[in-house]
Amino acid sequence: MKTIGLSAQVREGIGKGPSRRLRSEGFVPAIFYGYETEPMLLKVDSSELIKILVKGRGETVLVKLGIQSDTSKKIEKLSIIKDMQIDTVNKKPVHVDFYEIRMDRSLTVDVQVLFSGSPVGVEDGGELQQLKRDVKVSGLPSALPESIEIDISHLGIGDSIKVADLVVKEGIQLLDNDDVAIVAVVPTRVSLMEEVAGGEEGGGEITEDAATASAAPEGEEGQAE
Image 1 (cartoon, rainbow, N blue to C red):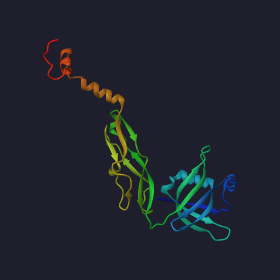
Image 2: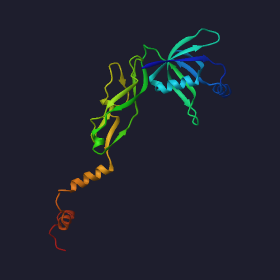
Image 3: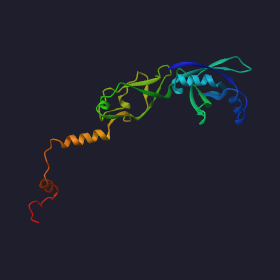
Image 4: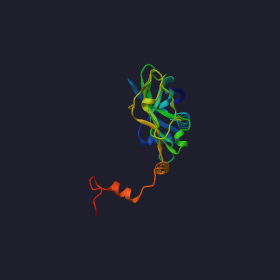
């Protein structure tokens, strides 16, 4: 996982009023907390936070916070973005939670799944369906991947890749159920119709008498009307 630095300052005051003032000044209210860690109210520069979000997903990027207060020297804390509230109108962050991590403690995160290759099944008329966009993994922060790439070029119509098929390095544990499908190539309506039409061809002509005989209940064949 990549590590990105971010400056933060201790903030005073809680509630909607102080938070609105911070946002009008270009800051995002934040909180820092963790295992056996006293929570700290912070503020971070909005534009700097957005840069981090552009560079990677919050839970797969380590954020090294440089926290400055008026009464003490600057301290550094390693964290991940655990939660974030987004304004529904302008799509900008309005509050963010930073969770402290320790390099010797396992961390559970959602890791994005990326695909490579073009499935042969799609070339044959099938449709690619992405059923999961990320998987939940656990491991030491230094070993956690930023993403998991899957080669899907071999998938034919009716094939799928499940969590059990993923390959991760030693020390990483997949937490989703093994039988959960991540991606599949399914037949389209057009391909199904073509398959049915293909099955009818070469099957010989079905006569009316044969159709009637096949439809008659057992034991009634040969009975006169």
